[in-house]
Image (cartoon, rainbow, N blue to C red; front, side, top):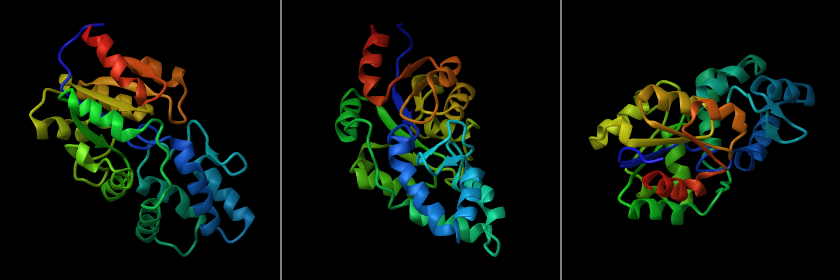
Amino acid sequence: MAGGKIRAVLFDKDGTLFDFDATWGAWAKLQIEALAEDTSQAARLAEAIGFDLERVEFEPHSPVIAGTVREAAELLLPHLPGRTLDDLVIELERAAHDVPLVEPVPLSKLLSDLRARGLHLGICTNDAESSARAHAAQAGITDLFDLIIGYDSGHGAKPTPSPLLAFADSLGLDPAEVVMVGDSQHDLHAARAAGMIAIGVLSGPAMRDDLAPLADAVLDHIGGLPDWLAQRAG
């Protein structure tokens, strides 16, 4: 499993650094109920974004799992007469800053270990950069990252490779020296297009069979990264 030298790890945020349904399920239910005037409207909003109100979780192929906040707002807007897209985006982004985060493993310890190995670290998310920074600060891990990139940071959004390449360029790295870790096909498609190593994790809604055809490896969660890196070096 030996290969070229790895110099950096770039993480998706939701479903990767933070368990997706444990973090976003209850939050999404609260937002839908706050936006809806009755149960019928709530059901339409939930259906629009692929969310199960009874199970309080997203469907595996929900269009918002790997989408941007604006894309989620565009899906909700037809069921919210009288609202504007820009105002809805702002409302959702503000609400997202305070979501209760659930770490799949203790993040500070894991990321500090990776930094101690001499690795550069980054976040590349289809969430807003301000939300990503708020969540990193809430988890106490901001200083462990060289760069935090959101869909609105000026580099586009996944599955295009542009934000991933912006990370590599900012550090003077060959994309082949970077591992992109994510829980969705968007993440892995972006990694492939950028020429990076693609690692899937199962801490989001996607199943192993969804990720395996696109990934160099699929891990249960990011806690498996140190062992994977050790095996690859060996």
